[in-house]
Image (cartoon, rainbow, N blue to C red; front, side, top):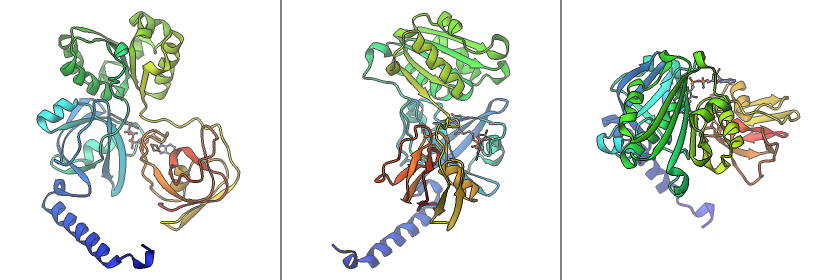
Length: 362
Ligand SMILES: Cc1cc2nc3c(=O)[nH]c(=O)nc-3n(C[C@H](O)[C@H](O)[C@H](O)COP(=O)(O)OP(=O)(O)OC[C@H]3O[C@@H](n4cnc5c(N)ncnc54)[C@H](O)[C@@H]3O)c2cc1C
Ligand code: FES
């Protein structure tokens, strides 16, 4: 069929009808929306100063999750819409039982969203949430390692670990687990009561909580002392990037294989090894453009041009920043490899322009 023969009127009418229907259904209740997943905020609980758990009830169409996955939430702060990514901090069984999920959010000192959430969110209001995604999940196919597990969490990195452990507690409470939790001091301990209850829920769990203000940061020696057989375990690690880099290095040095190590990053600045020449980036949708001279990423350039593109991790993990390239060459900010010309959807946070570029979707 040629473009001339496509019957546009019925398509437009159908689109308008579905928008209108969605508008009407959303007005009855946001959870009836056919186009977005909305979740009702049932409660906000303070875990420790600066960290809050949101108890949410997603609509019936929301597809659930696998332990260890994350969702995107959209919130308005001072009239600006932001989208941020958060790990589920409950088990899928909890969701199946009660129809509720939890997200546990630690304030980032100079962050735009996390320090304001507890004050801007109203119990009873609705938040848009995405479908769950992520690969930080139990690896069922690798029975040899999943029989013994080492989990390491630092700071808010405990959230997906809790989801994984709550799931494990329901399905395999006899599993041999070593859990090492790193927090700055006792006042920053997230999930205090849950941590205290864990040993009674597992028959073979060893839990150590390390206070880095007193005991210092993780070292190869204290890691090995806590878990001498780490090379024979499946490893799950979540925390700040520096912490995860150290754990990875120490465990590889002590005989662990790359395939045994599972990491969830909450985001960090990508280490750029690439610079590029001057380029003009034109953002077609907004009509804005900007000149780049020093290898900034598309995300940074869009922000400098006055746009507010979506982002989550700013480090190539969550895909929240995907945008549509119209024309021009792009290179990966870390590897320096060209992004293939046929690849139209690119992650704005980890690509830099290599010559003039147009971006259609911003
Ligand atoms: C998969 C995944 C799961 C996550 N799960 C959790 C979780 O369970 N709990 C949790 O607390 N957090 C989690 N996060 C982190 C969370 O998504 C947010 O990054 C965090 O809450 C900070 O958001 P913010 O809006 O407060 O900070 P932002 O405003 O996004 O700022 C974050 C940091 O980046 C810096 N920054 C921001 N913009 C720029 C810029 N243009 N140039 C330079 N620096 C800049 C800020 O100064 C600040 O230090 C997760 C992230 C990912 C990717
Ligand atoms: S912001 Fe997460 S991949 Fe770009």
